[in-house]
Length: 458
Image (cartoon, rainbow, N blue to C red; front, side, top):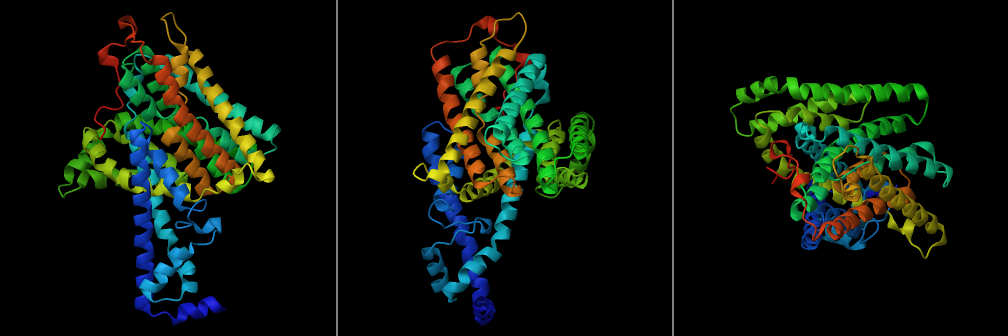
């Protein structure tokens, strides 16, 4: 009864002032924290996205308690509460309620960031890049998805007795491959135009498609709380058909999409057109029982063959840089890393699970390097190591699991450690294996077949 009484005593002006201050302070914390840690990681030649995630951990539920999602049920920092109470002239006891009530707006921004990031991922997926090494890339991708997914899922269920749906989701999170991290390392060392480099790039694109389809099915099943065979088959068929239609439309619908864009003369028409396409695709995916994230990715595939592709990419990239930062910081903020504190006996099982996932994540992808067939000489270890980093794609998958509530705190932290571990380790191992070993000219893919995922990116 105390809280409603306090809220009733707050004037409308003070109420609005408190909510405004809370919203502004949250954004300031997000962007300052993300920028500081991202700048540090850039200088260490590591992905900035990890800096955003770690920033969330520092200011969130596992750190300073300045950014605490309501579902964590972590008490808001007293310093944060006192600052808002004094500046807005509201009772300190009322601030946590105002904080939780207004948190939905921030989560909406984060969701827009996730969808924008998946749209950009699909937009940058050059399907023609599979021309020169398509069959080899396909075999590597399939093994790189099936092996870690199967080992992770069944290992969690049989060894650690994890429930089916969380185990399947954790297994699915290991199917990802970060095309950006691998492409950066290959490009730096001069291996991007080699047979190995192009196989990895093509396989990474297919991994994203297969992984997102799996996750769309798992998230939909998790919402229903069941694991019956009939809805699984229906969802898999729906997901596959959805992606196939998106791939077909990426070839056939581009002229119609371009015509619509050309009719728009107001500033920002290409950005608006792209987001209208994404909205329609997300709506369609949700309407047939799939995850809206799959729709965002499919929309990117459709737009990837547009004649306005580069302009759309240039317009969307800053949006992703802004809003996706909010998404990843919130993912980190919601992490409860106390569940993996080795000094707490009950937390040691989570660390053991994290070690298991990390080993499976490495073995599953490195083994995929030996799925390359053909008479041409191939460095199988390089291919396998190139498939290892989960990076931003793994964090997207983890974010989906966090948002849908499918992962418990221990398993969530274990997946996070797996993603961070493979992302840090893969570039180091690739540099050790490739440094000082320039590729042979005969092992290069002809330039007309080379796909450079870094070209045109900002």
